[in-house]
Image 1 (cartoon, rainbow over the protein chains, first blue to last red):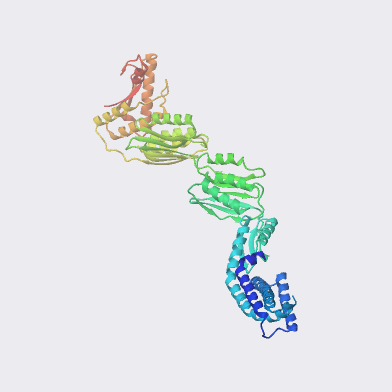
Image 2 (cartoon, each protein chain N blue to C red):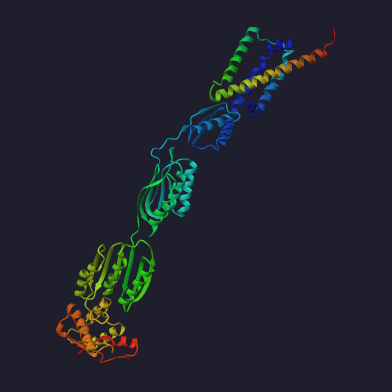
Length: 98
Length: 464
């Protein structure tokens, strides 16, 4: 894990920034949302991929790419969470008190 | 925090560029990651004792193929690669090197190279043996054809190193270790080499033994070459020790009265028994030849050259074999020198006087038996007598003044007759020769000194 982070820190940072930007936009975005059912399926899918990765059953390069993808995705999600939370905080401060 | 649940439904559009980023990251990083892990795995196995090590990295999975020399070695190799940071899985394709039974190692020497074959227990030992061979035989090509195998006996390396030192003492041959038995064959490079190898084998490490030592000694060679042009006798080759050396040198100077003796003999061990007893009569036979070569190789005596006349050739061919010790083999190759042109009696007399001025016919002390050392001189006298076939020759015997006159008179007659008998035996007609004894009546020097007496004891040839 440490090796992957050190070796790919640039790409992970990119994913984090991408997530931060997406999270920043998501607070005020008025586009279509993912339904709860869909979100659950997606979560299950990602959980399955994580399980595959931890079990190390995917061989060779595919296994490496899976690990890399999941780490980048994790960074993306973390970036999204931080971005959304920060944007929400900024929006709520600028809104006049009722 | 509640907002997160709401907002996360809107996070999905970023996944599209994220996937693009992921593909790009995977595409550009796979080769560097694999190269990095290959380098780290190789470094981790640097100190492991393995042969034919092969490292393949696929993603972060490392496959190690190698020949290990013990189960423990295999296990340690896998563990050390597993400990490399970044490695996800290790596929163990290592195996134990095969066990050799019997464990055979060999070193073979031929004219141009030394070939190391058979099995070595470890790569380090293999390298050490090859290096030791190169050091021991500086300049000789060393071909390393050793395989690696398990099953070497304890202290194998020490035994092999000791034997590598011995291969330098061989001209050609093979040394083999089979389990703990050592077999040697071939020919030693120098005289004494076989004995030196046998002595060194006593220091073999505990547990090893000599199964067979068939190393042969090189032939023990003694050579003598009589050169009529340079008037030299060249002695070369080996003699057993200084005593035999001086005995041979003295015999040579007695038998070869006019030739200069060039002595290139060197003392070496390993002479066949009866060496001196064979060489001295063989030198006597060589002294009777006009030109010739004597080669004594182990127990074989080869004499080749030209005798001065037919009867001498026959005598040498027939007579020499019985002078040798029993176990020696005599191979004569004697031809006869073409007869020299006849000369008139005056020249004949001159030739006799010149020859007898250089050397004297010797007899056993107080007796009329011709000393074998004088055979060469007598053959030359025969050769001269053959050149003046019409003239009659008086053979005169003289003694010193010691003893009674009658005894001296009789001795001088007998000695003159012995010389005439020799000439007749050589094929000359008896009618041409008269043996006359003068006793001590015709001294050529004073009889008061040993030197003078020696000059007075003589045989003279007078052409009439």
